[in-house]
Amino acid sequence: MKTIKGPAIFLAQFMGDEAPFNSLESICQWAADLGYKGIQIPTWDDRLIDLKTAAESKTYCDDLKGKVKEFGLEITELSTHLQGQLVAVHPAYDLMFDAFAPDHLKGNYKARTEWAIQQVKDAAIASKRLGLKAHATFSGSLLWPAIHPWPQQQKGLIDLGFKELANRWLPILDVYKDNGVAVCYEVHPVEDIHDGDTFERFLAATNNHESVNILYDPSHFVLQQLDYIRYIDHYHEFIKAFHVKDSEFKPTGKKGAFGGYNDWKNRAGRYRSPGDGQVDFKTIFSKLTEYG
Image (cartoon, rainbow, N blue to C red; front, side, top):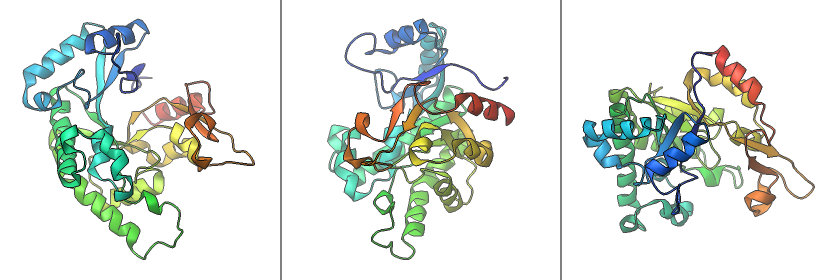
């Protein structure tokens, strides 16, 4: 396998207030001790990266790479999952997603959106300065309340939603194109890009913008009962990032795909550690290798 490297770890879900999870140096040592070779950095945590400075200073980026390299690690991608989500939020979710914004922007939809857009643009420039070719993010969601066609969606509503989503992202995508970095949307529940059909809708709405790509995570497809192996056949040319996350789907007489408002532990579809769920990673790795 010439193109698959790793393992790497996404630091977002591990950062905390206690050592070794409260600084770049200590969490790098922790990851290296566990055998990881790379880290995916969440850009909203300033203990790991100052995104604005990274977009402005090559020296800062060189120093950041050097710090990570001291632990035998490399940066695989930067992530703007939270800022990407805030690029497009339906009013029904406005209050909940406010938690992702800085305190001074909470409750101000317009200013929060503008901040998020600039953050994702800054990540493009920072990625180039760090020598990265791919970037991980979310698309945001303007249409998620319309996921089930009841009441019947107004004619043209979905097309209008994807047109607006594309309008918000096109100026960002152009910055990534200028910097030679692929925007890899994690195909994920509650995002407007959550399967193959929605990815194609967005791609068409952006006039097949060359920066539009995919972060492939099969765990989200198990929860949707989507064929995650054939997905690779359909979209392998767009897959530029990969999350190795497992999940399982075990419906009962009481709950199925929608989960009955239960917490993660008690849903029919839930995420698991790699190897503990139903994802066939051997076939996935073979398929990704087959397509280079």
